[in-house]
Image (cartoon, rainbow, N blue to C red):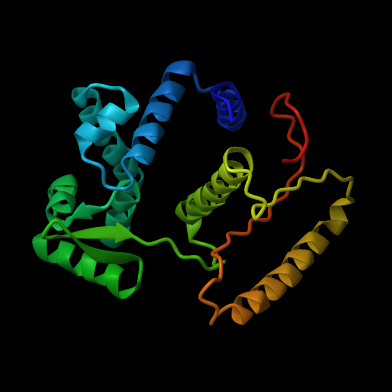
Length: 245
């Protein structure tokens, strides 16, 4: 794929964010700040040192440090009024961290309360501990079940999961020409009273997919596949092309 076409694909993805930004009357400056922070977040997810992230994004080490701080604050601010385990989980959403780094980010925090919160998260399977460079690092674990999370935090987590899958499909279809990825969009007219039927269709899909998963349980060549289904009324958020890839 040429660089120009690659940029066009990325531009198409950005229109989703910019349409919502226009609807929320978000200006260019805060949108640019969010884009910078999201770009830094993605580049640093695999544990790259800060200096390597700076090189990758073509920014100064000082700017990288600033974005790192902003990212942590962004994930901490919404969680001030909730329990400590959830606050830690929000923090780890931004990046895996050692206990020392978690304590510094949450300061002031009681040492015993922090240990209890970490133990709770590990016990409940929400966080795992990995040995990295002779230290223990805590990683947030996203459930792959279809359980709906509590409140807005669970909905944002679900949104992130959906968009992660969408990004994987786009990369496979456009950048790797991988036909194992599939995408179709259909536009139809429905009566409002028939919308519950879509949910019943989803239930039948869920049952069939779980049966397929059961048949692949002992297959060493089985593929991990994320399947997303979503629908909604056209909100006329802006112009754009319609079609499928």
